[in-house]
Image (cartoon, rainbow, N blue to C red; front, side, top):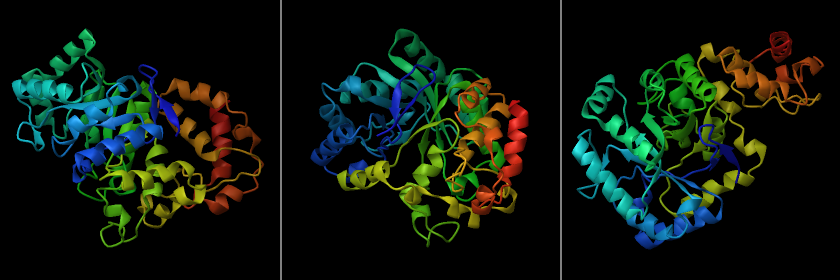
Length: 363
């Protein structure tokens, strides 16, 4: 397992976490066994937006005595009073639900307290007016909530909450379909979505990724909006390559699903190569580096994708990106102009010319 550091706090978060939306398909004993197995294999980040109440006590039992080894992402607005998921902006209902979740999970603190599922400006106004955001911030002052997060599918709204300066983590839906405006949650243009990811990286706000498989649609040629299937590993790598992303949270039904997902950690690079998306990406994506590193290996040893990423982030105003670039052992000025990358780039980026531009930019 690999880990990425949360800039606001320094926590080391596993690049694979667990979504809990589908695990209720298992019995409580299997849920516990699945959580044990996840922990044994280095997973330490768990999103608790479940479809049912059933997983909460199972998590509490499975992680008893191990609470300091995991991070819970808990949602202020998810309500389980009926036994199944409900969405609420009622402050009293939110408080009762949070109390119940803490009790079921056998914990007295929340690692990441999330403003839950806010996709419309009217929803944001409701949680502001009702005092839910103030409640989360109050709990943070008391130490009950360690970090504040937001879950959303809407770039414009996420930008609005980032403007408040309260976020440490954003839960956002990232996959090739949504990024190219395919699917119900494909909200915002390619540039709007990428600008959001870059802003998060610039401001030290981590991204936890939901819907990496577009609810499974991308995994089946019959349901994929591109009429071509991607693999789970391709989708996971695609999300992990986006700026700001710390962890991807696949929804699993049980241990068998988890075992398959964990295979990503030891998969060969070609199994994670998602450059096939170039064949169905819109024309306006042509000529843009998506950091897929399909151009590797570079004969001169350049990490072309990473160099492009630091360049894009620096242009977006991320001053740390300049420092990261300077620390690279092999920089753009060492490009030998052999054209190997150009011949392999599925997005037809002229990387030889790009390396000259990047070298001039960083001076």
